[in-house]
Length: 367
Image (tube, rainbow, N blue to C red; front, top):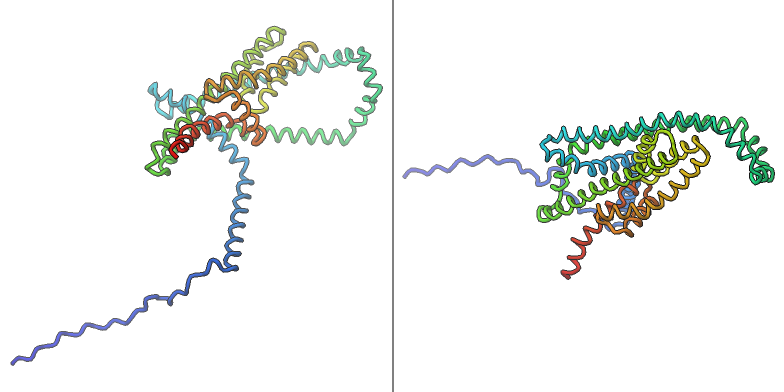
């Protein structure tokens, strides 16, 4: 009987430990006082580092925010040009050139009257002083408070040095302003060119189950921002037309140029209307003392009417925001966040009203 052959034994591999570098120990106890303090310290340091980063980059972040806001406001114009058959790149170019032309037109309109009328103001200054000297009340105030001695004492070497330092500081401020304007302009063009891609990327981060509703609500808010820009431009045009009429009635030089300056300045939140009023008033004083006083009174009255009558009504029609909400939002925006707050106050209120009406109230009714 043939002997059965046993199968060849398989080679025995060396036993490999389950954990190559040793068995891990028990997990760290996060409730341990040392670990709690360590993690808490790291959290505080991280929060402080984020705060420092935001604080140091605050000026740049403000410029980015303003450029993004302007891009959102100008996007309806780009969309309209695209509906007329223009490609997006060409539509963005046309809108950007229009904005640059508006800024350049305001600067060009400002320089000639500013130079000539400032010269006339300097020439008329002795006559103004003589008129004041003939006034008995003014002479009595000068003698009572020793104004001549106070002025001569103030005009010493230190004052002159501080004035020169102020001139240097003013030069730096002008250079910084130009840099900020160019930065915002370039960023706005980039944001307009890639607006659709940025919006779709933002929508892709929203869960698919809520993406359609978020898209509809966000598009409506973006439309209100565009309507706000149209309303702001309308108010600026009205301010320019009123200034032109005032300049014509008073017989001031360069009435159209002054109107352009006021309209462009009125687009600047918080301080724009005041800047335009100062320019026109200086031209008025260069013409005559009476004309200068009339300009000051006119702009004081007009700004009150614009702030509390024209502005709320235009925003109510364009952005669908009530008069009270428009005034309160503008005041709070300026008080809390300055120029940036004034820029976004009305569209933010419109967006909040839309979210409350379409999201909060239906949720409360469903409970």
